[in-house]
Length: 327
Length: 225
Image (cartoon, rainbow over the protein chains, first blue to last red):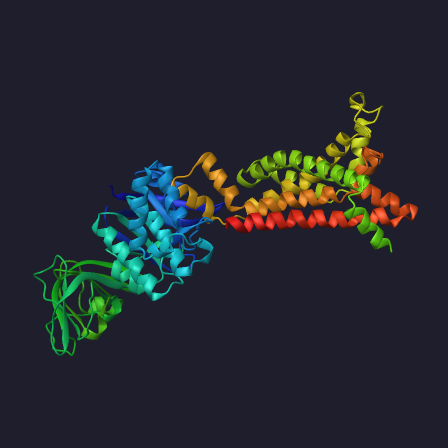
């Protein structure tokens, strides 16, 4: 197991550079999700990470060949070989000279997890879209890769297949497999990711939402109390009461407002923090505040001047309970 | 009346009908097999490798697909006739002359269609093979396995072209009875003489051969999908 470290890479089709990333680290055992619109470079970065493509410039540690040997990529439109479900799973195992008995037990295990065991002899041409996706992921998992790379695994599939795939991914994360996913599906992205990377036009862009992993520790008639992981000393975030099991809270930057004093408003969440950074982008500023958990807000030039916002200054962070979405 | 006589020739297994049919079939099969091997290699190389002059080869192959059979017959004739550079081999007006001509006729068709079939394979296939750890020969085998319908169709198109051609067989085989007479040259000859029974019988057999080969291919491919 190893971290993946990307430094100043570029990738070009002919003369057109379609991807350019300065620095990116992906921790071993983490689940990293790439979010972005079509043509944003998600598939290209996934193919670079899985060693299918080599960068036109820059480097990816631990190297394209190692990445190719240690990872398995599942395409958005997975290619299944003609023949049976079993043939597809067995293919990679045979290449690795795994004995027949072990092959058999691996096939049984992954097909059971992917809810495909009853279809083991079925021809792939007769599978539904969701079943095809699950089979492709089961085929990848049967090889027990260090890195699992999934390109749009939730595209065009039924909710039941989506849940099965999410469970497969979460189980592998617990086993320490590094999982890298590209998706448009925000719900799945927020639920699965330990980190989210936003892409646009081949570049990593600043996200516009705070993304906090944690769990609901308490509920009353009005609120859920969401406690951020690893930040037990910070007061829980208040969210309008809702049922369900959640692991992520998302707060858009634009829904956070800053105040110089402890003002009384209808916003149920208020924290005091220290401004860690102030970055101007276009005609607005991205302010990072350390409140025990790190939160970001967007403010205007006027607000920066009015509140004398600068690094190291204490400030109050406010946001409504209804501004928080749970996943 | 003519149809009755033609059917009688077929169902009584007339010796000449059988001989002509077997000659046609064996020469078409031999030439298809002979051209398939280099066509398979060229088609594969063109589809998986990028090199200088590739476009010219593809244009050349595509042009050859439309080459009239009599022109190919003429070119080979000039090579193997007594005064030609290969005249000493005594190939002219032998079954081998027809096989050579038909091989040259079917080669560009098979090569071009195989190139086209393999090039159109989903981009996900080679990448899936790579990511699952298949390389070299195994990767190539799987690409063929997954493209088998298109590859077999290409070979069948080559066979269809040669089993039904007249020009090469007539010019290089000479339409010699009990030696180089094929279904198509006999049909041409008998029709020109106004004797349609044998021509019709052979026409029916030609259609039957085409149908059988297609059916076998269709059955063979669908059985394994």
